[in-house]
Structure formats: C-alpha cells, structure tokens
Length: 196
Image: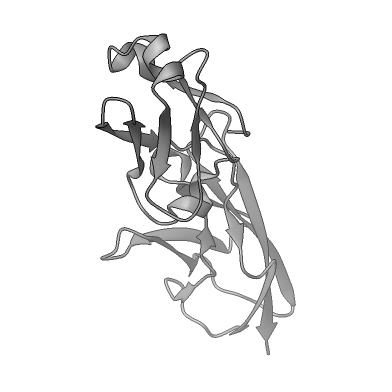
C-alpha cells in the first residue's frame, strides 16, 4: 500500500470520541524504528505512514503482523493494535539462471533423471510457486519432487533414447507458475547437448 492508505477506523473500533482523539493528544507509537502508521486526529482513522511491501517487511514468514500502540495522553490509556499485512500476487516466479546446458551421452538409458534449476517466488500461500511445466520434444518429460521443506524440485526425465545423428541438441523450456489470479510465470531455457 502507498503512504496515506486507510487501515482502520480506530475511533470506532476503540469506542473513542473524535474530540478525545483531538483534544487529549492521541498518537501512534510504533514498536520498531520505522513508523508505519499514523493517526488522523480529525477522522480517527489509522493510515499508513510509509509505503508497505509485505516481502520487505516479512520475507519468508507465513503470517505478517505489525504491532503499534495508540496512546491517549490525556487519559493515560494505551491500546494495542495489530495489523496483518496480507499478500498480493506482485511477484512472478523467477529462475537464478535463465539458461541451463546439460550434456548427455546418446547411450544414456531412458528413465534417467537430471535435476533442474528451481524457481523462487517471494509471495506466500496460493500466490507462491505452484507448478512447473516443460515444453520441447518427446525425448523428455518432467517430474516434480516434493522436498521435506515443501519445496517443489523439478527433474528432467529422459523418456526416449537419444540419437546424436538424429539430433545433436534439444531445446526445452521450463515454465514455473504461481497460483495467483491471474497467474504469473517465469521461464528458463534448457539446452541438452547429445554426446557421440
């Protein structure tokens, strides 16, 4: 969210009169160094004081919560506020390397597996990386293994015997997709050189 975006109606939620907020010196106290929220004295609304980016604030954390306090100085009251920052699909899956070269002997037996580069997506939940897809030719298929950490690990599987005289190399495209609406994708090219 950009700076100045509406977060909540503090006056209504805490049953505070706008006069109390204005006249008694209500203010926001953030717990961190950066001040993420501000209180509008005229409306009693909590608004963003800085631009919020969930990936910067809580990278790798499933539930992102920022905490602050509303202090009403005239009454010496402190109210705890938790603001949950929800994820939007603002990042596409991406590969560290845009291209990967593999070398395979033409005697490599069908069924052989080769690990491929993994995509990364800094969004969480359904907006994170959900699937891989391989396009190319009938010599190869894709297998996706689930790691102990829940990560999806793509593997190239040789589906049909290679013949260097028929084709010296094969060009494939690995596509990673997230589950957002609309889905975002990232691609990597895989070039398989067939050795004589």
